Length: 129
Image (cartoon, rainbow, N blue to C red):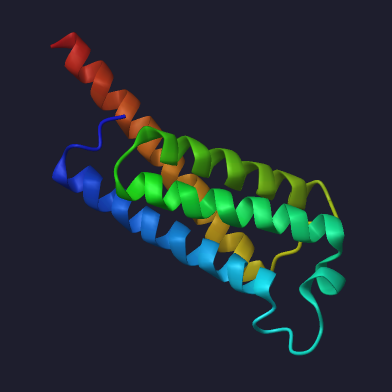
């Protein structure tokens, strides 16, 4: 992918910030920041806790990858977010999210796929020149 242009670089950094904030929100859920005295493992279940930790870590690493404009960050973000949304839509009880969380994840997935499509388009235009 070509993140070298200034406009694409800004767009990718905005997506990286959104991914970072979502990853930090998931990490706070893992730590039980808003659950009071109840343990997050009891609240989410053991499998749900593991899923959330894997998705949170992969989203945080993807945010770093996008910030440094590495293509592996976009691939990691698409993989993690697509898998999480797919599991949620297929009715997996271990993957829990609110309507706002679903919307933010969907926006992340669409925005990073837009980056893929635009990158492919620009590379084809350069190949024809």
